[in-house]
Amino acid sequence: MGNNIGFIGLGIMGKPMAVNLIRAGYQLSVYDINQDALNDLAQRGAVIAKSLQDLAANSDIIISILPDSPQVKEVTMGKDGLLAGLSSGKLFIDMSTIDAATEIEIHETFRQIGVDTLDAPVSGGQPGAESASLSIMAGGSKAAFERAVPVFQALGKRISHMGDIGSGQITKSCSQIATALATQGVIEAFTLAKKAGVDLVKVREALLGGFAESKALSITGDKIIREDFSPGFKLKLYTKDLRIAQNAASSYSLSLPGTQLMFQEMETLLQAGKGELDFSALIQVLENN
Image 1 (cartoon, one colour):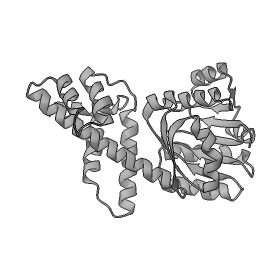
Image 2 (cartoon, rainbow, N blue to C red):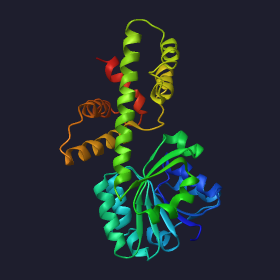
Image 3 (cartoon, rainbow, N blue to C red):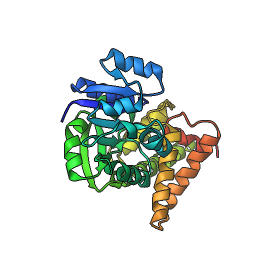
Image 4 (spheres, rainbow, N blue to C red):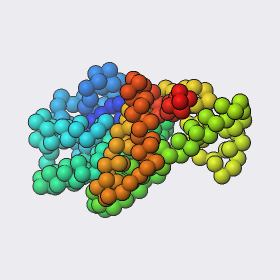
């Protein structure tokens, strides 16, 4: 297997991931609509692909990390997408967070031309992307996963093979549900403490010493105290992730009441034009009640 990787999507997560692949010695071709991001990667040694087909033709492994299912479908199977440049033996890895059904559709299409695929969404946010400490949850064949492991090791610390194609996305939905509800607990606790006049810094320190200790309390709690809502993970993207989780639950006739509540709170902030803020800004919903 060669070291040529095509990388699509140089956003808040994708750009530092691409940088880490260059640092690990991979030869990168990059594609994005953001010219500044492309120029920055080119200065670090990447080649700017002329088109998606060009990227596909010149890469052994192609990675995408994009906002949602429509963008992934357009990049893979659209009129000017990867499909025309792919050939047998290549591997496509989608590290976006999208619905499992789309991953299965892409897999079935690419399989017909001898291209294997993995859905491998990540957890860890921008800090994890920058420090190459992401958690990676992959779905697909064992052979495809084993081929991708050296690449994943340049991007993350916890690398898991979850099962067949689509299982990575289901696992990511589980992660987003658990994180959202843990964050809701911190938000409600801090709201009560603030209303009662108890110092939030002291509350956080006390809770970190007990059973309530969590990354949500440690990281999100700190952002709330500092009122720093600069995006580590944008609210609009988290809202999309919980929509995907609810759709997955509906396909199995499941009701997720806590997830539904969080989704509604996120929608409230989105409608207020705050989708670019970090999801920790959700505390503003309760503060404004």
